Length: 107
Image (cartoon, rainbow, N blue to C red; front, side, top):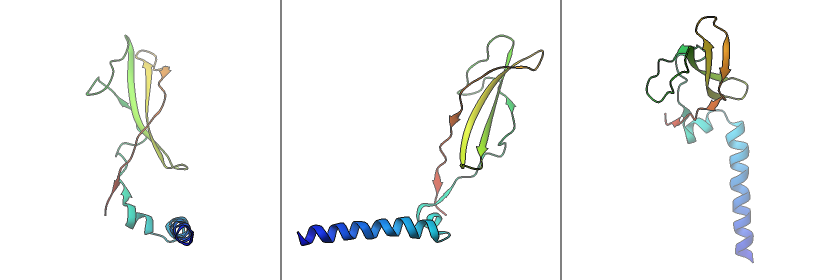
């Protein structure tokens, strides 16, 4: 029974360390876990997708545009796709956002 108590106290101490130290001390999270990789250089800019590697061809008469967008409030990076009418420039259809997973890089 005493060993069980010691294990519980040890787990609680580890939880306190993770909760308080990682959140309150600046730089600890980056030192222990690494920093997120850089954002793409063209964040927020729409690019015409000419059907390159891994992309789907646009339907007849539509122009496929893609961009990466960074939500600063939540810190999330997403990939957005829209289809525009080639003649009028009107947005015809928008695909659902796809979240982009950013890796942690050791410094």
